[in-house]
Length: 88
Image 1 (tube, one colour):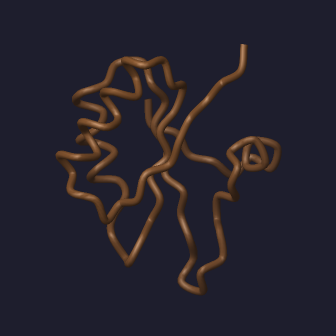
Image 2: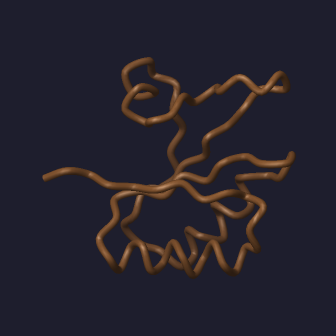
C-alpha cells in the first residue's frame, strides 16, 4: 500500500490548515508536511493541527537562511539521509 501525503504552506491561516489536515486524515492521507514560507513559523501551526488529528504524521519542511533545503523533498530522500523531523 502506498503512503500518500501532501504539503501545505505556513502562510495559510491556521484554522484553514487545521481544517484541511483533519479532512486529509479523514480521507486516508498518511502525512501532512508544512512548508516554511515568507519566514512564517511552522511549529505553531503543526501543534494546532495536532489538536484536530489523531493518526496522521505531521512534519515540517525547513529551509536555511540561504534558502537551501534542510529537509529535502520528497520525504523519502530525507529519510535515507536521516534528516527529517516528525511530530506525531
